[in-house]
Image (cartoon, rainbow, N blue to C red; front, side, top):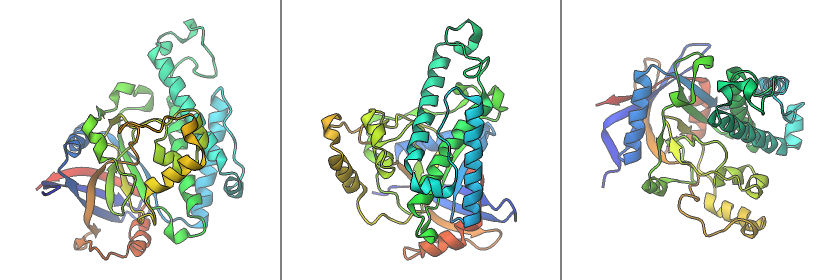
Length: 346
């Protein structure tokens, strides 16, 4: 049985914003029903000329880590000046290394913000804010603060970026190389409505595809859900999100995609999750008789990288013996942005 859709190929073009050099990546797409539905969402976003949003993780220098930290710190300060709940502050990279739980605390506040905003939207608060008994001039204010919303979306990315940086701090050349890519409505931030984001519900049989193991060169369906799934909570040692019963399995998907260039883990992820569960006695307050949906660990695989080309050079086919550490350092980490994502029919 052939698991590949040979009628089309996925092309992702990366770019170095400073040099304008380009890296073209060519993926073979799986022949699953959900991959076909995902292709439809990618095509629809391109038809609408929607904008790309991406979080490009590569091997970073000390100077690049410090620059990212300063942006992270500044974003927290902006949110604290425009929101009614103060987020934990960070003072230095060293401080975050010594107190990594601050990242879990920040992520909890990101989830709280998302839930609060959704509740205000559902109850029609922004139709007549001053008539609401919950009116607060700071937040939610007189109108939906789209700039603050963008700051919260960005802080979620920054939290996960620093979790990845800390996880590989002592082996920097093995830094986690990934990219989360999504399409955003082609409107001004203040004009975007929740319904402008294209997404579809997962089908029950889609849950069979979830994989806790992430493999180099594979592209996965984005999580597209506020919160954390079991594997994410385990990786972050976020015990409190379990105690609060806030694990949230994925229920819908968008054109969002997760590009993985991580080396294979030295152990099965489910073994690590099992040990984490037992060590923390989660069965005392979480029913271990979970449904398939509850065990939607990790992501759904959609496509695999087959070849690439830099600028106008010849296409290079990847081999099974590919030196992934060298490729991550000398190819992927020479670029820093995503220029385009499109499906090409053969």
